[in-house]
Length: 300
Image (tube, rainbow, N blue to C red; front, side, top):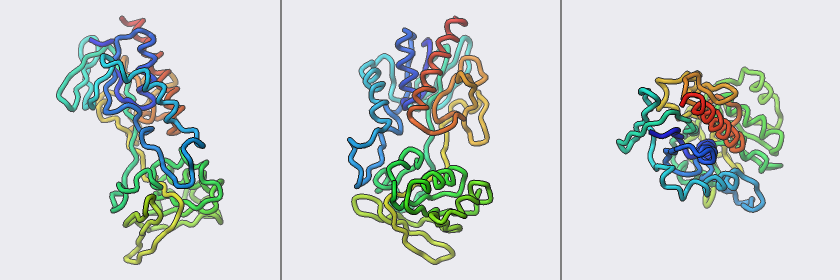
């Protein structure tokens, strides 16, 4: 039986595993890859990689600590976590099971796809799923946001402070009646296309246009980047029957990353912690590992 199993190998999971190793815990990280979403960096024709500070460099420091330790990681996906005497059992998609006294869930969240032609071709090449991560790059530029939820409206509001022009493609009225929505509607730098849906993404080496439609009429929108902000889906399914979740399916945690279930902790974008940012996830992963360590000291 392991002392600790960490689910997920993104910023939070890598940091938690690294901290657990430093505490000399018998830890196993179960993940499909090392780095999570930081493996997918937005490529833009007007930005040189060396001019931008991004989460990739930070996370790679933790990747370097873990990637050569075969005994501390398994490339697999956790499907379900069950209670058992003295701890928990993790079932994986490969059909294996692993037992541990404590578990940290750091499985992250994924953006909702538009599922239209051209999306996969231009993904992270002018088309991405996190405006909050890249907004500072668009000073005096034209951008487009797709979505009608609070997430999309927040992205538009942030971009409007920086960009020359922002177009919001809102499939429905969504949350446009909110305080933030009314602010956006009154902003002269923002054009809101309510009731429009994306039909196709067009481009060359990078995404250059969106084909959108409303009631059969079609038009093309040009921009220097396109942000899909439909919703974030937390990957909390493996523990959905064990820990409290909010209405969006995110794991509820306290200030020390405890879930309310003894022995299960959570960190990063799979939780209800504010802001989807690499450095926040790194800090949350460290906290979760230290809290799990204190738990193991007391209980075992």
